[in-house]
Length: 593
Image (cartoon, rainbow, N blue to C red):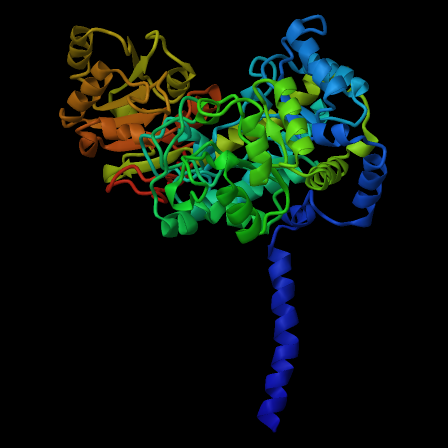
């Protein structure tokens, strides 16, 4: 009896204690998006949505399902912009997606269109690495997902989500088509590459969730993409229809894992890719996922219990437009379970096709009304019930704060990765008594801030060569390097996409030959870690640094790490080969003078 009493006492004491400890250690800010569901049934959402809905005609409700493209390079007098304006007035579209241009012009056009719209418009941007993805000349670009995948501390990813969310909010953007949570499990993938957080499904899920959580603090709706997974293909859906031949078990346990995670954590939207997946195709033909009832209604909505907004990928892409006419593709997408048609090739034609399908009984007004209500509820969650004009004054400064720039650098400080370090060569010590050379291989053969930063620490000789130089020039450079004890080779102006990752054949031969010289060779890759596979003699390189991207911040951070001013903290986000697997990292300490 006494044992039973103490057992019950332990339960009443320990369970609340452990529960409290869990919530104390769980980031409270993350919890904000658990209720961020555009299909929620809260009274406050329903009241506004219901009141707006009752004022709308049947055609106006139908128009809410459309989102068309606009560019802030256009003016109100341009025909392309006037076509968009006509879609707002005549077809009652639910939103627009902005592409290239400038923030002040985008804000002005947003104000103009919102003033023309009866129902406030959803304003979307495809900004996977921030507004700079589309407004590169005047807003901040943050590291791509593959670089972010190397960061261990997901609180930093959450902070990035908040900063991107803040900038979107300031610009009047309320949907960002991100995060990309495709698993990078095919090194020949030309569509995803550095847009993925990597090949580890849990890391991808955690990064995507942290990003989503930060952005939802500013009521920005994010869309997990490209469902059900664009990772294992070498075909770009912009150009053709990729075929995913994975088994159902693999897709369920790997490709779908991040989607399940984000759905369980309240992601507001899912973008469905233009993919053909035979194991899920019960539609009787080679149907793209974006218009497949098997993938959207059966898998995403019924099996995974997703109740947010379902978006197609851009309907202009050849992965779907090559085989389906405008209008028919929108009707099929609706039948499959889609809520928002993104970038139809011809809005007028598509709208008329949907009207005809409704009038013929192929689709029902009741179902149109239900999806319209979902969109209105989402708009309430975005704050569109209290829309205010975007203030143009100080907009540029507000989007380019010192805090945002500091975050850019901090991300690289936590991402740059050391994956090979024979004899603990890095960080460099006792370099005063050694002759050090740095070789900059770049497009134009000009030194970058990386090489300039290295010269702060020691009397380093800098050699520059263009990656397009002739073989003889590379051979002559090897001869010049004979007398040096340590060689640092920096690979600039490379790329993140196969097949050559931006590396010239002569550059590859040059590094392979240097590796055979039995020197202390450090190679710094300012591009994808997968480019290592282009080198036959990578095992003979003494130290390998992955800096991921070729920016001033990555240059500064990487040079500081080589000389021990900063520690290497990143971990490899993607499987490179049998020697370098995802999760690999070599941490270093700060070198104290």
